[in-house]
Each structure stands twice: as C-alpha cells, then as structure tokens.
Amino acid sequence: MSAAGRPGRAGANPTVRLCKPVAAHLRQGHPFVFREALRLPPGLAAGEVVDLLDQRGDFVARGTVEPVFYEPVTSNIP
Image (cartoon, rainbow, N blue to C red):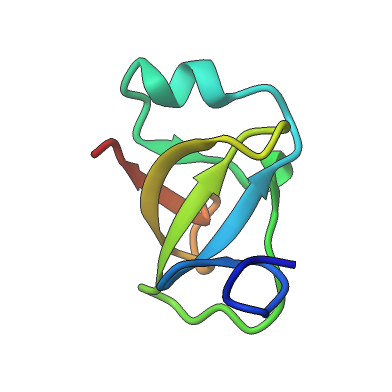
C-alpha cells in the first residue's frame, strides 16, 4: 500500500507495475508498453496518466492508459 493509503497509487498518479523486463527499453525511449508486459489495476480510464514501475518498484516512466490499442500505455520519459 502506498503512502496515499490506496493500493496501486503513489502520489497523484496511479502506478502500473511492469511484469516483464522492458524497463531498459522504455529508458532508451521506446514509446509503447504492450499489454503482456503490464499488470493493469482495474478501473483505469482511457487517457489516465500513470506512473510505470519496474519489477523492483522503481519509477521508469510516466504515460497514459490506452486500453483500446495493443499498447495500453504510451510512455513519456520525464
């Protein structure tokens, strides 16, 4: 549970955990994360901003949820 008291949330943005080792690709600028590489919590809306965390829980990127596409998160490296 996060400091905000809600599971899957850290600060203002929901967090999404990567379940495959794709963090290096994102850090190198790859713009998409495919569905199979994520653990999407229920209730995320299309266009919602999320923070992507690697398998250790470290911040990787910030992106938006795009559940209609094969790439449900588009990352924007800060």
